[in-house]
Length: 395
Image 1 (tube, rainbow, N blue to C red):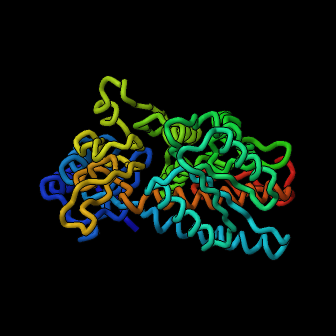
Image 2: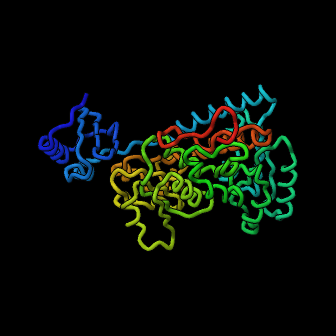
Image 3: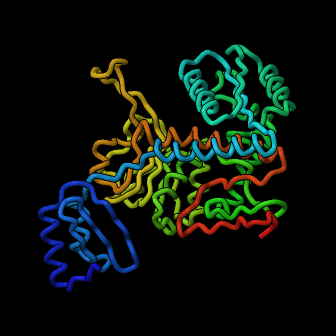
């Protein structure tokens, strides 16, 4: 058992470490009410000191190791396996196979790539998928007619409208025509409103079931993936300062709502924010979702911060066969030397988005069959106490 060092000895040890920081990645970094704990990969140095002592801050600022990488791909693979088992269970017990329909408008290469990837992922877990392709000159009436036809198809449980649409089409207007019970992206006004009204219940796994249920049928896929990554760390989030960079209705806004549900203190920064750097410097959690190549620099970040990078941008790279590589909205190579946890690009949020899409499709299929939905978020931390019981009644 580790014994707490006398204050004088602890101070001397901290000073030594701050001047000669340990190399390698810390295996643990836990914050309690009165102590911080550090363990290095080499030497397994262990310190417990009172919160706020200058020597501890010196260790953080001068000797911070590389951040722990949040492996979104690994977490997403586990989720996809759970979805696959759920699909098989539905097929065997009720003869139900979840169905996903994708509407693709135009011939954008990136949209075609995303659609193919989503269909492949659906097939791998046993979800049926179909595709409706429309010309990029199609009218709003043609798209709405396609949506109506899919809405009455009992084999289709989720309708996905691949965005962006051509500029002559009003995305918001068309999204509103997707029935809420088939809105697999969670973008309909009803689902968005229910998210904000029940963010706290959703984030704590207490949305309930049946007539007492609170919250939307599904969550926006990327936003849900971001919060799921945070929950996977299994560290206290309540009271943390969170800064969401970007206010899009697809990512920024729903992420902010869910983080508030986790009792974080949330700030949203955007193009009109006067001093983005100052907001970031005090953030315990940073969610970057602005689509600007490596916009956020390491020196803007608070030492030890958790960084979730939603951005995916191409950066010229002559060493790559295709002439570029994918990077996020955060300068990853520098930021990993300063923050505590960080998602890579690719391999971070992207795989989680697809996993959440598959889960949403299953939940809409269960809803159509009158079955209890799966929890919107898999919440295993001590902060999340699920209200799901065995009877299915209001609890």
